Length: 149
Image 1 (tube, one colour):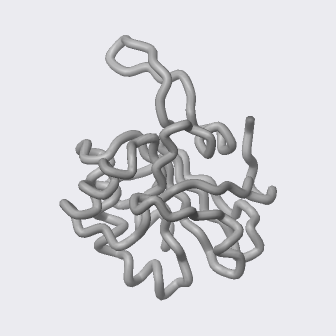
Image 2 (spheres, rainbow, N blue to C red):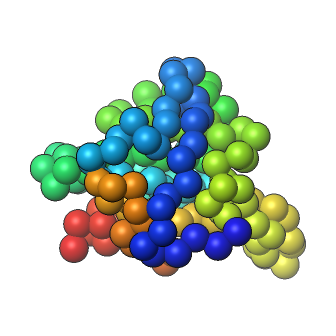
């Protein structure tokens, strides 16, 4: 499934790190940064999460809600949040339902091996629930700047 700028973002219902249900539609009227990342506590994902954390106030000032999402478990998310003091929720999409909705679970090549995995991508969703921007070339250490530009 291919998602394009200008189309309505697929709504979803999924659990965050605390087991609370998060739906995209609950943020109508706000801008949402929905960022898909491969795995908690890996170098690139940690750099990305910490960059968003360090710029969180600026993101809030521009009206953004930040939601991270990976196929990691709630427990792994809790540890990641605690270790790096992350101020935003992380969605545990262990069944990859939201990944599939957004076309982010794909065959990837890494060091000559092919496997299914999360494609690091950020969707900027506007107040009406439409895809405003898709950032597919994520700079993990400068990701907030890509969003705030």
